[in-house]
Amino acid sequence: IGRATAIELARSGYELVLLARTPADLEETIALAGRGIAVVADVTMPKDVDRAIAAVVDRFGRLDVLVNNAGFAPPALIDDITIEQWQRIIGTNLSAAFYFSRAAWPIFRRQGAGVIVNISSLAARDPFDSLFAYGAAKAGLNLLGLALARQGAAHNIRVHTLSLGAVETEMFRKLMTPQQFPPTKTLDPAEVARVILQCIRGELQSTSGEVISLHRGAR
Image (cartoon, rainbow, N blue to C red; front, side):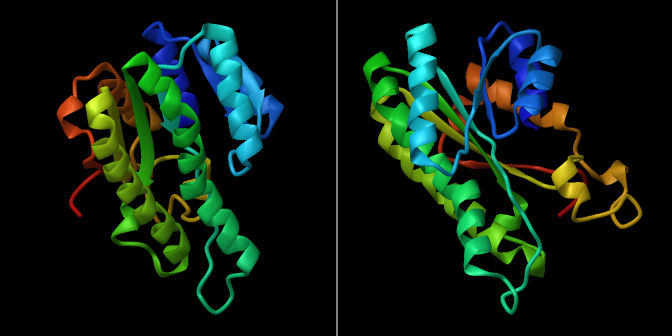
């Protein structure tokens, strides 16, 4: 989803600063997008987050858009999940969005404008049993988006949250095989990227604070 979003935003003329833990992934995405600056970082580490936001401001003098897209969803039931797994799931899916939003907030306020797009999941309200921790983290992300949208309204800061059904990604295919969940029932990452762009441009500005559900077929 992050790669598709980078390509979509690059086509629309946005300058990109992309984060990942793996340099090779960043280099491949930048090559496909045709532009972008790579920052190797762990989004669960506040120091890495602050360094990344500082790199954006140092390079461009401003920050207009933040897309919180990191996801981590290892299957585990309450009987066998470890404390370390729980902390990493919460850290990746919820705390990282808080760290980035907190770091970007004073910049947005100073500019008098900014957009945050959070990538959530339908698991926040209807998780598989083995994704209860992931669902709990995404439920927290939904509420974070609402709260920040209310705080940001007076400063022209919009916060949109996309709650996604199954998307054809590597992460999803680690959970479900094509036989278990056929590709005809999944969203293409490019579809998600186009909605993210609509949020950024303001075409969906009236949805700030809301949770926008995207999925293939009835729920």
